[in-house]
Length: 269
Image 1 (tube, one colour):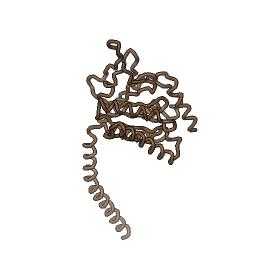
Image 2: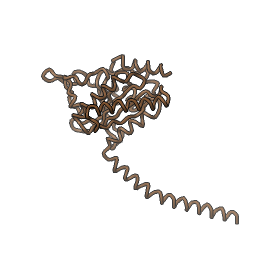
Image 3: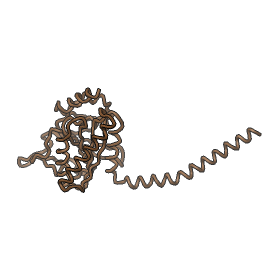
C-alpha cells in the first residue's frame, strides 16, 4: 500500500499540469499575471489593500505539497489525492474561517527555481508569516536539505520575522522507530547547516506529518496559531473563564449531589 501511495504521489507532481478551483477561490498566477518590467520577470503584488498573513508552501517535486493543501483546506479524501495532477504555476489561495483565522497559502511547484534572478524573491518573502518546507521522508532528502538551507537563508535575510516550519512528510509508510530516526537525522543535519553558516539564531520547527492521519492537521494548526496576533489574549481569556467556571461547576455538582442525596433519603423514609 505504501509503495502504491509513493508511485501515485510521484505522478502527482510529475505530470506538470496546473489545477484550478474557482469555487474555492483558488487563484493561479500565470506567466502573464506575474508581470514583466524592463525584461525582468517579477511578481505583481496582488495583496494591496487587505493585508493577510502569508504562508508559503515549498519543497522539492513529489514531496506531497498539493496533496497537503487539498486534504487540509478542501476536505479531499487522502485516497483521492492519488489522482491529483501537479500544478506548474504559483497558486495563491485565501483562507478565511473566521475574523481571527484569515491568511493566504502560496503553493510553489517544486520545479520552479524562484531564486532565478528574473524572479523577485524579496517581494515573496516580504509580508510572509510562515514558510513551510515539505520533505519527503521516504526519499533521499540530501537535495531537499540543501534547498531548505538556501531557502531559509535567503528568506531570513529579507524577513527575519518568518516562522520556519519543516514538515517531514509521508511518514505513514514508516515504522515508529524509523519516524524517530528520520526526525532526529533531518533535525540534526538542518541545524548543523545553520550553525556552519553562522545562522544558529534561526529557529526551525519540525513536524512528522501524513495526510492519512490527523498529524497533518495538527501540524498546520500549530503553524496557523503562530500567525494569530490575538492568540495570547484569547488564551488568557480562556484561562480566566476556566478558573471562574471551575468553582461554579464544582458548586453546581455539589448542589446536585445534595439534591440527589435528599431525594434518596425521602424515598427511604
